[in-house]
Image (cartoon, rainbow, N blue to C red; front, top):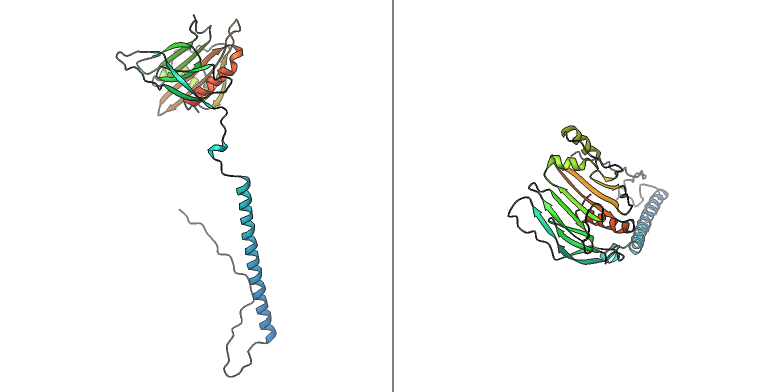
Amino acid sequence: MEQPNISTPSQTNLPPTPELTPSFSSPTPKFSPPLIATFVLLVVVVGTAGFLFGKSLNKSNFLQLVHLTETTPTPTPTNIRLPSEKEKLEVVVLKTEYGIDNMPTPKYPQVIEVAVPSSLKDTVSAYGVGEKILIAPKNWTGKGSIGADGTKNIILHPPAAENERKSPYVLVEEVPACVGCAYGEAAYYFEEAKKIYEKEFPAPLNIPEGLEVSPLSPNLARYSLPNTPEGIIKVKGVAYFKEDNNQPYFTKMEIGLSKEEENLAEFLLNTFISLNNLK
């Protein structure tokens, strides 16, 4: 590494110090008394000014430090207020089907802590399904399926729902290994993934009419679909896509709830992003 060129400050051009050669033969000094008096006075003035300036500077820095310490204390956990207190939600385990025989039964924690707004704390539950923990409306049911390649499909809905796409629903998909499947899903929400899919794969995309996508980051996007004809269900979702070392990964959560439950839908989507660390 090249060393910085630090120049030495030049010395103050003081009057040259006269060479005083003591004379043992004569008590009379070599230089005149006015010249010596002037030099001594100059040394005293410069030294006194430097001392007072340094003392003033140190005092100023100290006062500034005290002022900053009093007005901007270091944040501590007690200074940070969460938007809501964390609630302990009991995990309700739902059925998971596998594309491979003799798979072990997935295990889930009995309780999960989630920050839930006070207005929604009596309306949500935690569900263990498809080897994932999901937050969804309370007293719902559903199931998950995991294919041989690890692809996950989870659908949650009210107990009496006959058709989850016309009734309220929560849909979660995850594609961790199938390259064509991941690009095929991501192509609906990410322009770059769409270009690659259309170039590499022959199957045409069937993009839903009225799909609106709002990117949140290069890997994360929010989307919405038109309301059902009856105007009962409003569909919102969040999609995530990332490729590492030529291995794509895709996941999404889609929610269909009534217009009156829009705040609940927003909370569920944001919680899904947080629990899965999607950025």
